[in-house]
Length: 569
Ligand code: ADP
Image (tube, rainbow, N blue to C red):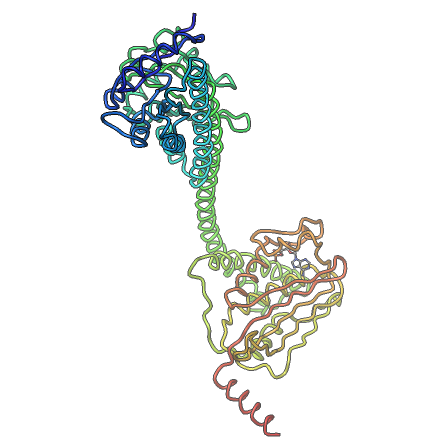
């Protein structure tokens, strides 16, 4: 037969108390209700702290409490206990207020029979149970939402674990969480103990329990949670004394899984209560699922950060290596060039034509190699954070004359150079070396990738007004157009990247290391300009560089006097 349910009756009138007892005796149910009677509120509250009651029948007119206050005090002290209020015929309005304040029902003295009493008590108990369950579910849903927000707001694994444990502790104070995480590199497990637990003692315990049949390993091997009802009697549990000392009675182990990968496990231990209920298990599984996703995110973030650091370090080492190598290569190359020039100029006696032609080829190859070494050194220099433009007065006409001089018309007649340099180019404040790198790399590429046809180098000044008024700006527009092999659309986005080359047999035929356009782009950026490319495979390519220029003082004066004379006309 099921155990009876005990009802606490708080009633100061012995006659009323006796009537209630008799009514209950006449009409009881299974399991039966039993009454425990006290005649004042204070001892009633005291009893609720010592015994388990199914409900309380509460008179609203007691020697130590009157009216609504009676309900409020009882509720505050025993919040989980369903209350049925007892009231006289003339104060049913107070009884209604009591229901509004949280009592489950009210009964009017003198109108109570056994059936009514049993029904009111049964309903009150069931309704309170449902209310509490709804409230608990709501709290857990809110908690899951809060935890999700907290967990996703950090990318640090130990903070994620701390948040998880703190939230569990807040909602279930008699539950502790121990997290064991697998190191993805070594496969070893690290134990992170929870609140009020001796982390070191748990780490040592975890090592003692590391065997194949340990409870942790059983959890890690199974995809579902594992519950232990009584830690002291379950044969799978080792080190019971240790658990007893910590006051831990029941266990729930949940694997931390993310996309089928086992990240570790979270072990929930109950302090002093029985097995985890289905509802608690469901809630803690949801929590563990969220934590697993947040832990994985944090791990990926950590791995990417480490990778980025490693890459940064590797890049730095590579730059240093390239810098030293290029420097060391340049010295012997320059010595060799000196000797070739001396041989060509007849310093060691006049050479026959055949030998001179061979020397021309040596000199040409030498220029290519020196160009590559210089490009490596320049690219590294430009990479440094302190790279900046060094402005000086640059007479653009002289500058283009010098460049043109370095690229004589090829004698084989296959490619024709055209120079369309505006006659009125002024002197500007700019970085001549960087202007040189830009133009030289663009022309060298045009030469390399134009087997037949023409290469046109053009330069002129344009004036652009600032978008929102302001002073008009002088823009130097440089363009190098060729009728060469062109560039496929798919490679356009990468050609300016360091060491990137178009993957084609045509490109591979030419020497190059994929730095020229990177240098063009960096130099253009340092001069606050822009570079743009248009190309058609098989037809040719145009690189256009636009650079804002500050006119040097003389040029500025000339421009102003030109403006004022035009305005006066
Ligand atoms: P590289 O040293 O290989 O010439 P760059 O950085 O100067 O390196 O150029 C990158 C790639 O862009 C080249 O490998 C080439 O495929 C392509 N490219 C550059 N300029 C031209 C051009 N004028 N015509 C066709 N392809 C070009």
